Image 1 (cartoon, rainbow, N blue to C red):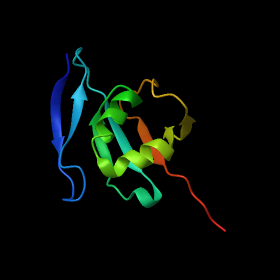
Image 2 (cartoon, rainbow, N blue to C red):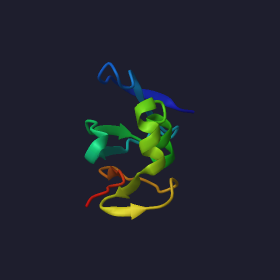
Image 3 (cartoon, rainbow, N blue to C red):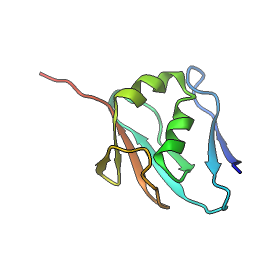
Length: 102
């Protein structure tokens, strides 16, 4: 069972609604999600338990689809390769887009 607990609205050209989900056990896990570089999105605070839940929420935003495919993800400043990483209350998730330079 999934409960909708929060609705966030964004700029007109972005996703209109992002729903943060709470798991069926009712535990409250608040995670801060930050977007670096050219992604240019305001940080989010969501109640999620793993990166799969975050990916499902962000995939609803058409402007995020490309970034989700190409960005590295860090949890508490440690790069992760799996969406199955369990998150704890107070964790910080950062999307790190690819960077090129000269």
